[in-house]
Length: 461
Image (tube, rainbow, N blue to C red; front, side):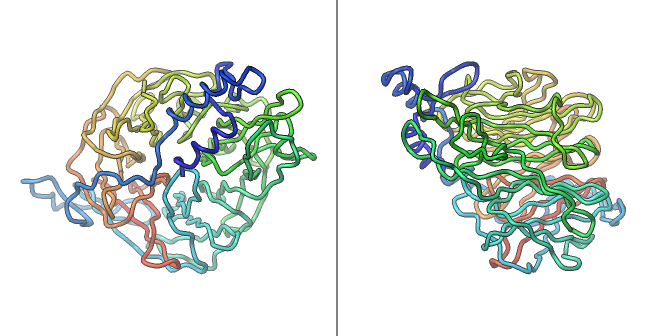
């Protein structure tokens, strides 16, 4: 959990890096190092396990605007024929698993992510979950959100994300790596793991795999220039342009300091081709995007023909675009700065959700600073945002043992209808995914360790 991360970062001597700043003061002097450590520790997020405000009404699976009668007209949408209606409605399906899934734990961004869902073009889904025995499992879900056929599995110690296309999809996961012998200038920073894209076909079988950290060719985590995955601030997301795949994730950064090495923290973007090759020279690639960084998010913009990313960073304490830094929204390094998700706006630009002081905002931007801020009135540390049909987006957040969602116009940012409380438990760092038929889905903890609940927010007319 992040509270524990503070102590370790202090031992490492890590401070605010990026823009030429120094992470550890071993070579620069003990006084500078101590000052840097205090600043870094004060700015990074407080424990994600802290209880969020619980002010919601009793859980339900659907709601309509108070005092209004929901339109009777409905329609079938997409290949799966899901029913669209005038107000958002939720359908919850419990999926029986072939292997147990890990629990939520404290939901910190240093902890393992239990599950992720991906939207297939045919209206179905891929469901990935982290097992309890060093495997990441992948199951195909039909239109009814239940598993079809036999799930497959891949070696992995942590799950990050899964995305799909017409010929299969990609899982982003973590595997065990090697630290080597350094030596470190001080402290501890193990483990030294690796991040991988796993390409699978429509049967869920392996097509190729590609490491997107750089512990290859004999390079270990404690070698100068290494990029590896440790326990601290390491989660990531995927995006695709239909041909290439981009991974954006937290990373450890090894820097030589005299006769020893220091370990810093930032994030990294790597683009991989449809053949599983690293695309060298791609405009989106970043050895280090933001630092220190958390809640790294990425999306493909087909109009601008580019990958767009945002992070939360203690570099000037803000929500920013990386590579190079551009401020989206100014924040405060008080331990409550968290990014949510990133989606395309209806006509031009992007919307991102973020939280400061437990207050959720929506920001619209194009190439830099936000040009529109929506104060949602939502009290939450960890908002989620997802595309929700044409011209709409869905804001989601945890409230007690339930999840609350509300639709917004993705052109103006104006709220649409009322809030809907869904009877599934939110996870601070997992994501809703949008579907071509206008629905959105979320994978949540089930009633036991061998089940997962799929919460589907049905389309709007």
